[in-house]
Length: 344
Figure 1 (cartoon, rainbow, N blue to C red):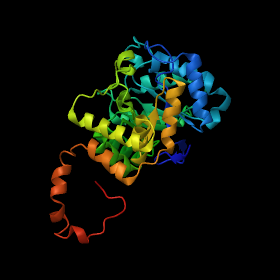
Figure 2: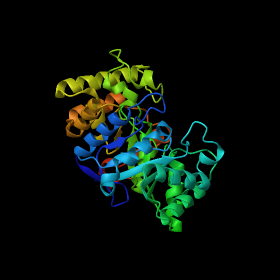
Figure 3: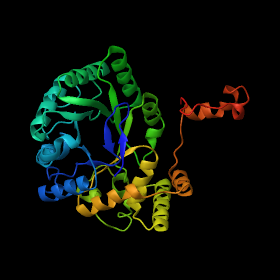
Figure 4: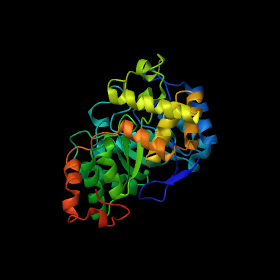
């Protein structure tokens, strides 16, 4: 396992994060304690150190399991969790959302379940549409200064809100936003329009969930196999249009050329795009297959083929700006040397 520096921090995290949404049976689908322990141990034996969970995963069961798993090696693990959705089906008004009150209550409950004195990376799971950005950013700063959290990140937030939070934190000397978490795969590339350019501009770490497109990119649903689509019925991409069919065809073709699984190709593509994938295995066999993706080397031609099959329209304003590029460069775009990291 290789390691990356997370965004604008000095934090060293493994190139594959272990997602624990399948740790527990609270949702009616997942892994029992013995299976979850085997997955965790296998990930650690492979060199993985970045574990991602949430208070909402399996309604608190995932965090409670992890509390026992991480105890012997707590200082070697980068532990990330999330708050906003609540840790029970009836969490109520005060234990959900993004308010400072919900943040503090959720963090304290997570610390108890995780049996630890701090959370290494706290994600705000998603925006509640109500809490002002400055309240979120200031709340994160307070909780970092209290020593309960070391780094802060935003998950599933629109780019303008992340940029606002990052700017406010910088101007006011608050704890910085370190990273963003977003859905990213060959069948979901919308983050390339605004979120990923914004993250690059602010030097934020980009962590991608569902790199397998909810299992679609493993090819198992095409073969009639069951999985999350039947067991959980959520976070699913179906082979519902010509683009997704073309993507899966390309993934299967490249997998055949390399003699690896389609899932490994899909995860390797995310790694090649500079986004850190979160793998979420439910079995030890799935873990082994996911981990093997770290050793898959896609050729430039294969990357180009996958890029082309999965491409999305950049949309406004990017298309207008691209069409105006010659005029914007004084009619000499080919003679202008652009900086290594261009502003987009």
